[in-house]
Length: 105
View 1 (tube, rainbow, N blue to C red):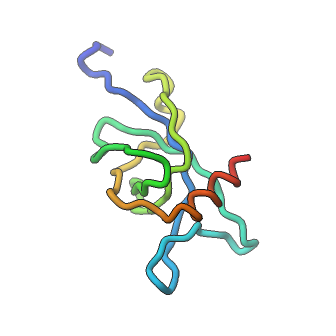
View 2: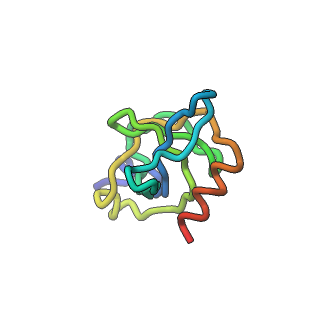
View 3: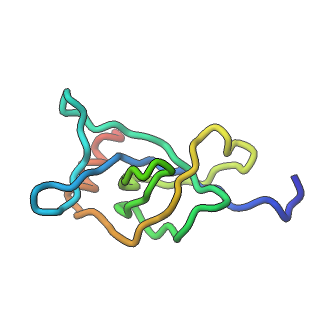
């Protein structure tokens, strides 16, 4: 691919979230009470800008997830991960981010 068609690719470690009864975001858990870590990446048509961990993003399937970690990804490796749709301007509370960081340990 020509240099003109290339774009910067980042890999994001994320955890899906849902809102509680008060409208605050919390980690989404399965029937065993466990939150699952997933990986997404920026795509050519990803909207918005990544700011910092704790930021919310939306997947191609309209699932909202919190970004726990971000790292650069080689352009040639981009097809190994699913692209995300957009970055949201919303952030989770710090305690939710800390829960997510503990899951990565």
